[in-house]
Image (cartoon, rainbow, N blue to C red; front, top):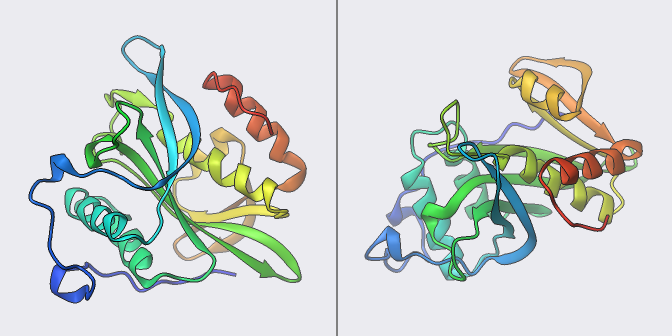
Length: 222
């Protein structure tokens, strides 16, 4: 099932709970819940770079942070849509991010990718749909990006969630065919106007998780 979401920019006067904007984006700190410690790969040295995956809640601080990320990443393709959907507080939707683990207090500049997924029942089967995924501006479509792995590892977290919650499939619609094929997703051959649908079946969850953990030197039980 292909879902279409209305996407629009969010402005301060449209957010009732937005009492005031932080004085400086550089001082923003995340209160999002930590999910996993991970490693990105530094392109210059090829060595692991400590990072973490966090999940946003709907606290006032995280609402401010999503709004600020939308402002910082305003020229990216999907951040406006992710921001809009976050503020709608859609049922069964979650928002996770990869952040460089530079300190105990994470800041907006540390975020390297963000993903929205939704759990749903389709034809009697529980499935996890990746709605949007967006890399930070300095990473997206940039061969000279300082680190790699922000996209693959955030998909890894979605697959890990799907396994833990009994989903039978992770799927998404995208025009970025090469990325998903390279990390192991299959083209489901269901053609849509705006892209192809890619999926990873539950039988392949363990394979995907293990090969990703090996590639990025993760020590995670699945």
